[in-house]
Length: 67
Image (tube, rainbow, N blue to C red; front, side, top):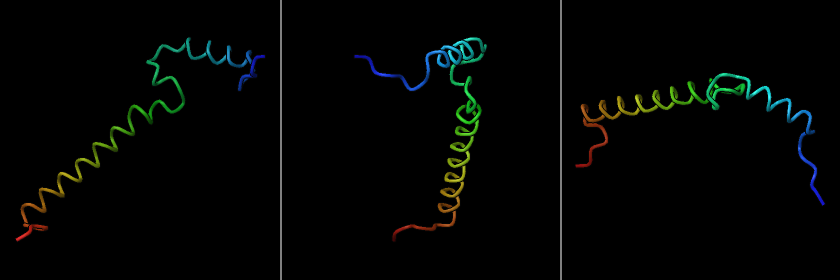
C-alpha cells in the first residue's frame, strides 16, 4: 500500500529539472533567495547596531546604573 504524494509526479519532475538547471547556489534558487541571503542578515546587523549605540549612549550618560 503506497501513499499518494502531495504533487503529481510529472509536476515534481518538472520542478526538479527547473531547479537543477539554474546555475546558482542552492539557497538562492527559489523565489525567496534574496530574502534569506540579503534581507535577514541586514536586519540582524541593523538591530545589533542599534543596540550597541543605545548601550554606548546609556553608559556615557550613566542611565540605568544602580547606585
